[in-house]
Image (cartoon, rainbow over the protein chains, first blue to last red):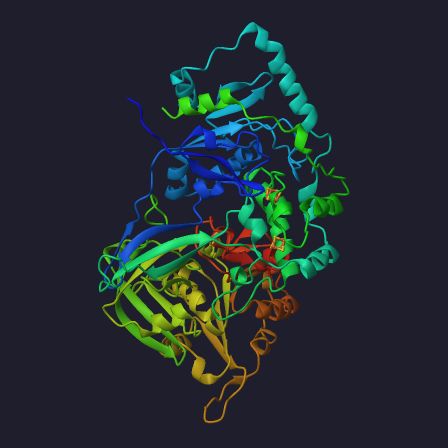
Length: 355
Length: 280
Ligand code: SF4
Ligand code: SF4
Ligand code: FES
């Protein structure tokens, strides 16, 4: 019996690509630079109700969690690397049932990058070749073929159930090895951010002040970032459309926020702990490059470059990292022609995997 | 913490009594089956939810050794604290917690205890004072220093009178100033007028618990250093914005790396001073 699972995949959106539910594999963009936003919104919802309760009596009940099994195609290696961080964040000490349920019910189909994307610097952050975190990884081979590898039992099962996936043949050996060789040549970087944690402990006031003058604290960078997860929690009265007179139903809900917002650092009584944009940018960088590595053993940046593309005033994390570490980060602008064409074969595989 | 399977869900508690502490503050006692099983230690804190309105993080003001679970709330004029002040006996609120590291009271056994309470910093310290009183023979000398802005802001006045009447505890009080119409015969001046005069010859036998606004820590710390106390002997409790209490939401981070809700809120002054922005 075929079960239908919603399929989320990259689709064109103006000049960009976004993840959206698709009904047919024809809608899917197989050659896309990267999606404008990361895939985090499918796992840590921009807003999510945590529980409902009665205004007068309490009796809080966890909100039902949408546990529809979804398939997400087109997760880039950087986004999958970021999941290594999120998986830790939402299971360390206390399980976060909302994230963990969405994570469990989202089948991640990764798509390897063969070239650096616009504004990306995943070589420096070593996040172009995740070792886990996906169910299946696709790698485009010459001749409109894809190498399909499982990264989990779920992935393994899906591949085995898919009719048009064949075993790797002897003649595929060389192209496979060459593809990975060229991927490595294109993406890896002998430079790294070694020492960044120690460097973050030094005083960089001049840099923060300079960026603080420019930054609008608009939160665009943090909302597109696959490694930013700050959220806030609120209560509200949840009047249901069925019965407008019933105002006793309440909800506790959370939504994304940003450490660049002043409000994020404001306590009851009005005191603000990081009152200037400069101090909040310092906080942002320190969290990514010192706090997160200390607690989770990974960098708080996977080099996707989305924040660079998103920033309306041109704050460029590559430039900040360069100024902090003195390590030069190459700026890569992909040329239109280097992009591969759509592959009919890949769409067949995706269709097949929907079964 | 309760509800480990879903750490975001509070349990219900009914308000059983409300007391006015001063014109800005009230204390609340609660009851519920969960509260009767609650285990918490001085220095830990709770999150109180007014269903449909908001949530707020509050330090325990009581110890488990006497009348029961109590939280005190200052009306800052904000949505949640002003709503809390409108609540009545019988109303139901949600409670999550306890959160955070407590004061390490066991490590303090055998030590002399100095409690320094600036303003509403008295409330969380009161929990530790009650712990020491309930286990009085485990500790050495006991001194309490209280400071408030003006005489009418002193809280738990009857209880403090009882402490003053005891001979195994020394209480000193000061006010920043005396507004017109208020009476005060005691010390006038910032809390450091009392710490500056604190007479001891064996500072290493003491532990200091100090809670107040962070700016006060700087001056109190300096004054105590002059009396021979090191920053390692001084325990403080920090206030930060908190939304989850369990190290998930990042709102309480200091310097992008220290979670006040998990690594604190109790720290030694030495730890806080080593933390950029810790004393902000
Ligand atoms: S900080 Fe910028 S480059 Fe790094 S992961 Fe976030 S969006 Fe991508
Ligand atoms: S996108 Fe740019 S301007 Fe907006 S908050 Fe981020 S760094 Fe500041
Ligand atoms: S209060 Fe959420 S991380 Fe500390």
